[in-house]
Image: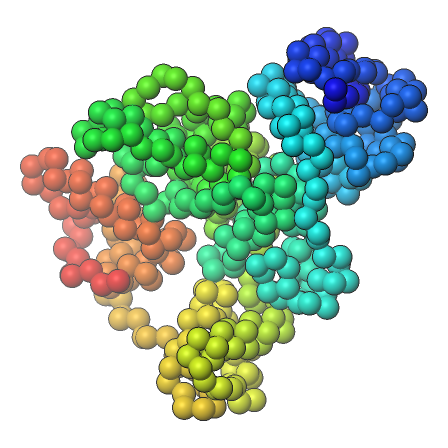
Length: 468
C-alpha cells in the first residue's frame, strides 16, 4: 500500500486529511511539528509528503533535506499564506506541488488517486542554466539575452508543479509559446494542450465553448458539445486574454479552479476535470481589477505564480538571433539561400518593434519576399491614413452605464483612427479579435431596437467604410 506522511499543526485539519487518505487506501503517518515528522521519516520514507509550509518549529520545506531518496517522494506544500516568494521558495526546495488552503476534499482525493495509480511521475529533463545560456533557447522559446534567461529560470521552476501560472506580456511577446513550454516540461506533457482566446469568442458562446452544452439546451444546440475544460482533462488549458472574459463567467471559472468541477450548459450534473490552468493577458491584471474587468478573487486564484514576458526592446541582441532564425526557416521552406547584409542587421536594431516578436517575423518575411539574394533593408509598415481632424475628447455624463461608456469610447477611437480597426485596437489596448467582437455585439444590440446607429456618440458623424 502507498504511504503518506501528513505534517500539519492544526489537529482538526490533520485529522480530516488523514481520514481522507486512509479512505483512499493509503497507510498514514501524521505529525504536528518537524521533530515528530523526522521520527516518522527515519522509520519509513513516504511516497507522498504532504506538509504545511509554516510549522511551530520551522518550515515544512526543511523536511526535504531529511529524505533519504528525494526522487522517490512527491513533496506537496500546503499553505494559507500564498505569495510569489513562498511559491518560488517551495519550488526551489524541491516541492512538486503547491496547494492553497482551504484544501478541498475532492482535490486531495484526486491527488492521492493519481499518485497511487501512476507511481512516481518522472520529471522531464530540464536544461541547466548553463545549457540554456549556451543553446540560446528553452522549450519553444528562442533567445539568449539576460531577460530571457530570467524568464527561462522561472518557467523551469514552475513547469514541473501543478501551480496555476499567470503570463503577463504585451501582444507578440510569445505568451502561448511560454505556456506550451510549461506544458511540455510538466508531468502533464503526454496530455492535451489547448488554448482558447477569451476575447475572440462572443459573450453569448464563451460559456458553451469552455464548459460545453447538452443537446437542446438553447436554440441551435442540435447536438452535445464537449467544452475546453472537458477536452483538456489530464492536460493544460491556456486562457488567453483572460481579463476579457465576461464577469458572470468569471464566477464559474473560479469554481473550477477551486473545486475542479464544472457544469455543462443545459444540465445540473457536475463534471470533474483535472486541468492545469494557465492564464495570459496583455494588460496589467491589477489594473483590470481596479477597472472592474477582472474579479479580485479570481485574480488571486490565477496569480499564484505570475510571470512577466519581456518586450523585444528589452532583449538586446535577441533581435538579430530571432531575425536570422526566421530567415533560416523561410530558406528551408522555400529552398533558397538568402542572407542579411550588415546594413539590414543595423536597421533591425533601429526600429522600435511595438509589435514585438510577431512584428519582427512579419517584417523578415516581407523583406524575404522583396529581396533577390541579399536582404539590404526592410519595407516600412503601410502608412496609416490620416485621422480626421477634431478634438480627441468624448464627453460622457456622470452615471452613464459602463457598457455605454465602453461603446462610445470604442466607436470614437475607431472613427479617430480613420476606421482602421487594427490601429484602433492598438490605441485601445485590446486585440483585433476583441474589437471585432465588440463591434458585432454593438450591431446585434442595435438590430434589436428601432432606429439608432451602432455606437455613434451624440453629434458624431457616421464613420466611413471600415478598413482592417
